[in-house]
Image (cartoon, rainbow, N blue to C red; front, top):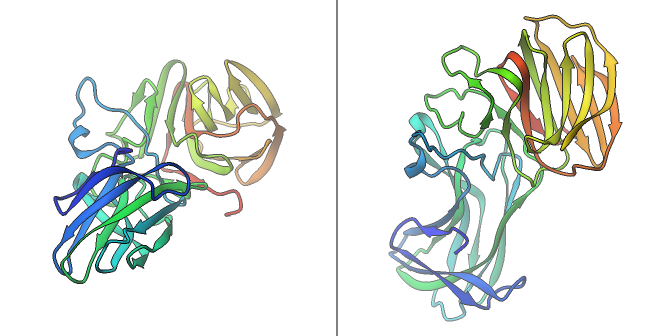
Length: 330
């Protein structure tokens, strides 16, 4: 079922042969709806409510869907349906007090019996960055029994998101980050208050689908040996990073089993001062800014995709936000 579940008993799911342009099977949405009613089916994109509890073995995961990306679906209506059916994309995201709220897509399609259709939804930056599931809503104006076939539901594109503390109470906004840092403290006024006792730590989010984008953050270091941001993160040993090092050096490095310095320049910096870092990855080119000035460029083809991270080596850093957006957006 590709993780799809019906949200109530008005829709039953079944994997069936046919009704697909890209494969041999599709997902049948068998609906039985009252007049004016709707049924919803969805697949998870983040930690579900029954897995929120933070125990010794708490689930740690980044979402798979973010604002800025475009959701696409292709569907068809069974030729035996007696009435048209309306279909729309939707998602549910964590909001105040970690409760789920629904957001509906901006367009709908009406499928007459036997018809095919497609839905597209470009998620805006204002949308939540803790999207828990995404799916299809089916509705009819009259009481109806029928079937809609979901051929594909996917998403693509660079994210356009600001990671920071939301203007409402809740904890799930922190859980979008995979923690490979010794200390991630929630009791400080800064949304991100990170420290690493020994070696290098990363706080990571994003997916392997991300390719070309900018990541930036205004970071204040406290006694750190090295610190900064990373892009195309594929794990603790695979990423590009923009780092300010103790002793006064700005570097673009590649971590791929071992560390390789791709570009560097001398930079005088001090502790307890905020520095705006921006790292752009576009194809095989890497660009790095410090306080709005383009300082470094590099070329490398080893890592083509991946998420982002905050990086701290033997010290402490704080920041209010991490911004990720397409390269063409200022």
